[in-house]
Each structure stands twice: as structure tokens, then as C-alpha cells.
Length: 62
Image (cartoon, helix red, strand yellow):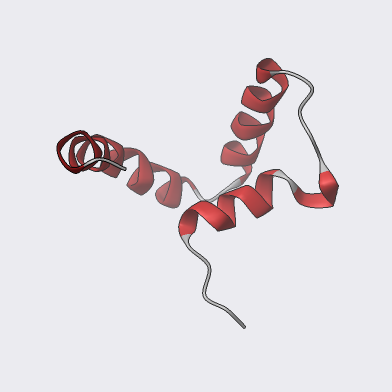
């Protein structure tokens, strides 16, 4: 089995069963629902690292 990145894991989780958002509000609601169903420690860890990841992108580009 191939190793998945965290981003790919979240995409699979949000788009399971070929779900597609018709607008940004639907996507936002689906993400909120998926996050509420995940382990809170995982969500909190990723929320803590967002600032540092954005800073790295700002300095070095995507």
C-alpha cells in the first residue's frame, strides 16, 4: 500500500463516496462535519502547525 500524505488522507475522507460540493458553503460544512468526527487531538495538532507551515510557504513559496 502506498503511503499517503496527510492532505491526501483528508481529501479521501471529505470526498468519500464521490461526494462533490456544489458551492463553497457546502464544502465548508462538509469539512467542519468531517473534522468534528475525527479525533480531537489530531485536529488540534494540525491546527497548531498551520501558522508555521504558512510561514514556510510565505518564505519559500509553495
